[in-house]
Image (tube, rainbow, N blue to C red; front, side, top):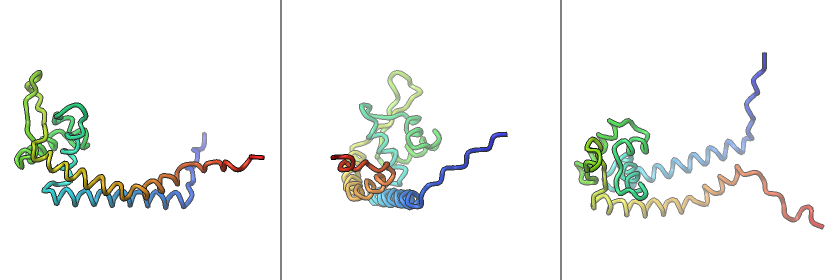
Length: 151
């Protein structure tokens, strides 16, 4: 019978860096939730609008795409889109090629709201960037000293 390899031991500094990194992420998420609330959105509604806005070349996403991007079930995405549509943030359109498929696009109201939220989020990210970079740098192997080994 073969013995299992014991789990790798990580230095205490690695755990401290992981804890600090997770804290920085939670602070950003807390900021995001508050900013979404001030814009009249739940965090999940903001995430759905962001998924649609960030859909690349596509101007709209299907309900299944939204569910996938938010890691939620299809019927939950339907209810989320229902609320967004009711509040004037999205419009639905039947797909021209497949009438069973519905695409969801941002309304002008959502576009305006997303512009403000994007600016606030980018400013917040720029503020925590040095902290995140410092924390991530702790996981890189030490760089060789360029002065060592020179004659």
